[in-house]
Length: 145
Image (cartoon, rainbow, N blue to C red; front, side, top):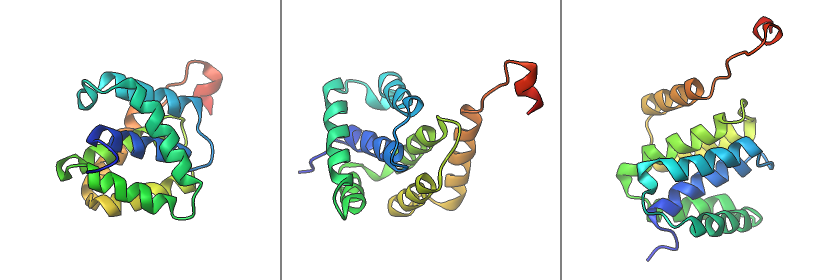
């Protein structure tokens, strides 16, 4: 029996994405919360588990082989048909603060590879995340940049 439920595994991929650059931005945290509250994949999910999964992931990341351990738990808990979902949610969290750092890109590449998400599917997922999180200028000065 796995430590994580399938929903926990999705949360773990999002939390790991947020923590990949050693800083969890408020936009990333709000994105995770919104995703868990709004998406059908999380229907019936116990909100208390969100905090538990977050603590568990952060504890694991403090260990030497933490990323490998997280990937192992995710792969064990997540049915194959949800691998693209996990990758898509991770991409949404990475894009939510307006920039994707190199450490986040490395984690996403590792996640894509370990979950077996094909290059074409990954490119479509990444493009969709960028499109959903684009910021529209609200002033003339921002529009000029």
